[in-house]
Length: 114
Length: 112
Image (tube, rainbow over all chains, first blue to last red; front, side, top):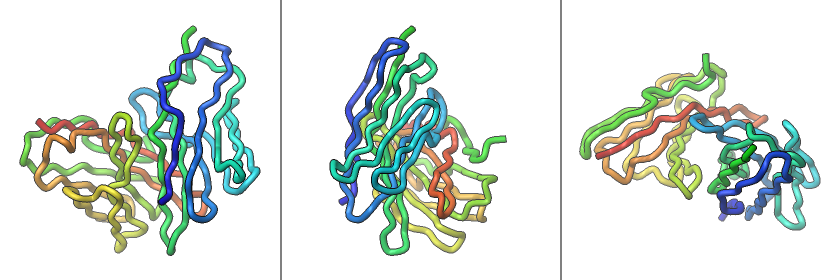
């Protein structure tokens, strides 16, 4: 079946550290890939996306590249800030039989300390 | 105003009670979803609807029902609440072909 596996947290970093959150997927077909972020007390919001192999999504200093050969979509940021503290979800969207559904990973909680 | 509004934001109910969670959106999207979030399990899809006449079960629909009253409104019901339905519930909407999903702020439901 279609699934997303992301690194377990929690992840704790100091401000200005480099961030990587690993995400790999299993899918039949060619999914679109997403990173969503959930700030404390809020719903999820789209951080970035990539719709085909080798695409790079970027937003707010975060980047992720769609790697078909390794079925991965790892999230990176060169210098994290305290305000980046949140839960990050990797997700895939696959169209099957006229239906499209988002499948989420379990989420990775990031805490950035000053 | 928020694009996706969920009511109530918090609710405590007793086992066996019927409860309805409501969702309304101002995005004008046809597609609406209900997800459940549990610690360590991520988000799991309960039900989804691609238009007013289309309702589909997600991966964990048992014990839940939904109603799509209008394009902008999609409600989730627990007919007889049980403690393991204690969770954070999210409504979302999306458009084709962008597929970006817009989420409400969530309803924290506790069943005692």
